[in-house]
Image 1: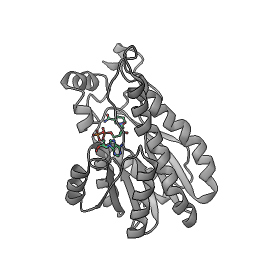
Image 2 (image 1 turned 30 degrees about the horizontal axis):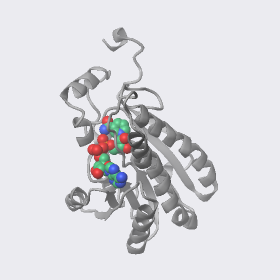
Image 3 (image 1 turned 135 degrees about the vertical axis):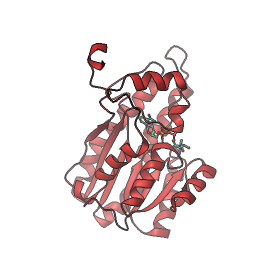
Image 4 (image 1 turned 30 degrees about the vertical axis):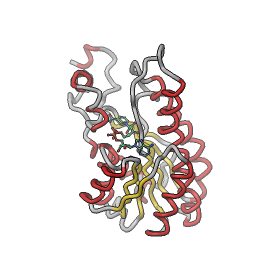
Length: 251
Ligand code: NAD
């Protein structure tokens, strides 16, 4: 059950963090994984270590997404799974957030999901099969954090995009779902600093930050043939972080 034997699976932002964790688990499930990333050096190194392929791409560019998907399909055949995971999360307080801060966030996190989905769709429609899994977040769709208004908008936007896209794909055997991670110990999260990591661990009922593979197992389930009847849905993977109603409830 839940095998991805010989399926071509693209993971965006696979050089590091959650994407790398997803790639590792999809390989274990039998997929022929292609890591894609804007960081070519890190991406090639990760691909070498995991024994998968690498393709450079910038998800904020439609041409780059199209060319990368085309090259992958020519080399490996039809794409069965897309894990649209690449994302950025630089903080910017609302009072000083620039137009560029906003646009860059939306370009990578939201337009990136759109461009990658659009790039794989023709091939998936042709084979009458596809699994698209977005990496959203609890931040935006459920919770908020000062400095991440633009990030939250991009992550909530992904879910709005997903629901209509799911309807457009439903008759072609293509599902599109999203995982919503809590706080996952990745290079990107470590960059927020020790105080942030400690504060987050204390706000999670399990008292432990999420590991990339915790997200990856959820992604792998939604990417499996067995999840064919699940589409347009979200799965929160956060160790119960959004549950407590008060400080007392966390004790
Ligand atoms: P990370 O910074 O550790 O890794 C992100 C990867 O995406 C990097 O390899 C980076 O080079 C790549 N990338 C960035 N911009 C790109 C672009 N334009 N085109 C292609 N690749 C690009 O981040 P992470 O913590 O692993 O986060 C991965 C995803 O998970 C993001 O979408 C993030 O918003 C989401 N997420 C993370 C957390 C967390 O706690 N770490 C929580 C919720 C959601």
